[in-house]
Each structure stands twice: as C-alpha cells, then as structure tokens.
Image (cartoon, rainbow, N blue to C red):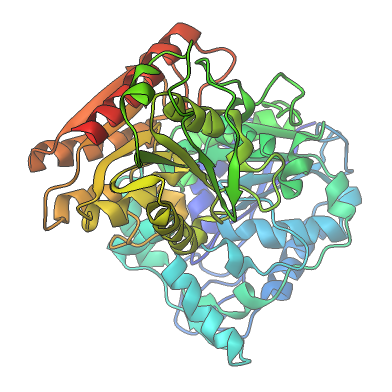
Length: 542
C-alpha cells in the first residue's frame, strides 16, 4: 500500500503550489491531499480553486486555526495507521513548506499515532514556545509584525509580496517566469496571528520520523547542517537521531514550482525511510573546526583580555619556526593581525571559537613571524547578530591598537567563513592604519535564506563596489571545493575588485573544502596558509 501525503503550503500561498508535485505522487500510486490554510482571499476546501473576493476572509485566523485544519485533514484519511521509519502501510506523511511546517508539526504533535513521517521542505524544525515569526527570513519584514505584537494586537494581515519581492522570502532560482507570475497573482495576505502565536508542543511529535529537504540554492545544504551540528548547538542535537533523514535539491526555495517531479521523487524516498543521516558531534572523526592547524607554531603564552586574546612574539625571535627571521629583525611595537572567526556559532559553544585550533594556530603562527597575533571572540549567534558582532570586532580592534606593544598604524584584519560579511564596514570606510584585509573561505554576500535586504550593511561585494575610496590590499584564501552558493559570492567579490582595480592576492586550495578537514590534502593547506600569511605580513611591512 502506498502512503498518503498531506501537503501544506507556506506563507501567502494555497494548495495550487503543489499541483505539479501532486500529479507525480498520484501517478506513483500515492494518495495526495493538498491543504489550503484559512486566510483572506483563499478558497474554502471544495470551493472553486480560484480565490474569490471575501472567500475565507478570516484575518483573525491564527496558528491554532491552521493546526486544527491540518488535524482535520489527518482525521479525514481513513485506514491510515502510523509507522516507524517508513509509512507503516498507508501511513500519513505530513509535508510542510516554509511556514507550513509550523501547523504540520503542531498537528503531528496531536496526532502522532497516525503520522508516519514529517517532511520539512526548505524549512527549519520549529521549537516549542517559539512563534513562526522567528523563522521569517527577511529581518526588515520580521520587524513589522513584531511591532504589532509589542502593541498587544495580533489582528490584521501581512500583505503578499509583489512580483519582484519574492526573493525577500527565499531564492526563486529555477522558478519560471510563468510560474512566478502565477504565484504572484494567487498570493494572499498572511494573517498576523499565524505568525505571532507561539507553537505549543507536548513532545509527542519528537517520536515521529522526520525528513528535511534542503534547497541548496537558498543557501543551506547537508554539509552546512552537519557543520552546525558539530558546533554543539543543543537545539540541533535531535537532527542526529536515527529517525531523521535529509535530502538536497539544487534549486531555490520553491521546489514544488521549480522542480516538482524531483521533489515528488524525494518525497516518495522520504516516505520509504531513505535519506542522508547526520552524525553526532565527533562520531565520524574530528569536526572541521577542531582539525589541527596545518603548520608548526611556537608555544607562546596567551594574554587574555575580555573577548580578545593576544599572542606576542618572543624577544629575539622563535628559533626553529619558519619565518622567524621577521621576529629577529624588529624591535619596539609590532604590527598586528586580528583574526575574526566565522559563524553563526551557538552561544556557549565548547570549546569557544578563540580556542579552536585554526584560529589560535593562525595567531600563534603570525606571532612566530614577528607580528602580534590576535583572536577576537564575537557574538554572532544568529544571522540577525551581525550588527552586534561588528561592534564587538570594532571594540577589539580599538583595544589592540591602544596596546603600547602594538604599532597601531599597521593593522591587518583576517575574517573566516561566515565572518566574511563583517568585512563590509572596513571596505566601505577603510582607515589609514588598516594595511590589509584578508579572508579565508569567506561568505562575501548574504545568502538567500539569511533574509537580509538588498541594501544590507553586511554585503562586502556591494561595499567594495560602492566605496568612495580605494580599499586596502586584499588577500583571499579560496577553496576549490566550496559550495556553489558561497563560491558565487566570492566570484562576485572578485569581479567587483576587478572593476575597482583593487589589489587582490588570491591563494587557492584547489582540493580544499570549506573550513578544511581530515579528508583534505594537507600539503595544499600548508602551502596555502603559509603563502596567505606571508602575503598579509608583506603588506604590513610595506
């Protein structure tokens, strides 16, 4: 017997978005029920599929309304026992896209015995007590309902996006012009109550097998999720459970419109219990962020001040360490290289970022060659935290420059991975003392699912293109096996640098992955890190 799929749409949309996927599932022998959730301008179940004026104009509908509607859809399915792992014969597979995963999880919590599997299509797994508003990607859009909530009202609606505004809610990669036109024409307002009411869970849904379908063009893939799990975030620990699987689709946020047949195939495989399984932190070897630094470094004392760690060169140099002749040549204040970790990193991660081998190793290596190596720990715990993290970094740089052992007129900043967007401020208005900016496997423009507006402050590509003055020399360590989404931001940055005729030194790790790791060629990494550090120090000495 084949499974029964209940398909729940996301914000502003109704059951029509599932038409292509539903046809493919039906052709494979499955039963399909696509749900239209209550809201203004949306058709009632069984009504004409085209929205009519006044149809279901319940602006007061909230999350509870939608959970009850999904429960009703479950109750309408006869002869569908639940299951564990697969679908238990004709078990029900609840599929939620975007916002739709909230009523799906709420309904699964109340009908856990009848649900064989939950499938989250390009959506995170909601948490108990958290309103759906927290998952809205666009931070500026998120602020509008938040203001309503602060005023004590949940009435009203959030207007649907215009045709050119859908990217504020996720990547439209792969969606045809015709499909985008239809999506816009049928879009309906979203009742604010559906976003502001917290999701309440008893915990019953935690026992239901779950599958995540990640749309990589929207910014997240399986490898990235595994890296987040490896950082030790307790909220992500459940993703390593035996009943949790993952699939990737190389498309944007609306796979039911961009690749409906591929999505249907993934849903059928998910119903059968297939998919990639994540591993708990450390279970499959040393996580990438804890992999040893590839070069020999001196054992230097660490001087910790607040969120800043200093590594000073030894007087007279460090014998036996490559490049130590730099440390022997200079007396007095030394130039400094400030290393800034990536993220987001969960608050309370152990070990903390400044104790990661890669960060502390870079600082010690720079100190072994005569510069002051500095690591900064900042509070980038969520993509909404970039302003706070930027303030942390700026304050740390002021602290470094004020130290009498540091030559405050010769400073380099080096950003890693998701710390890349923090480059933007320094590109937009580079101070005279900033002699070099470096970045290793960086993200150099906001990814689609981050929800940053087009004029975001933290957009290094645009900051470089729009800067009123020439940028400082740039050093970029690039990995050849980077994810396509991050690689595209690096390509855009290099194109902007070319147009500005900026000085850029690109150092490649041809067979390296984002952040490196045990499977990467060590010689490539050793040579690349050595070359990149040398390039930065040369610019500090110029």
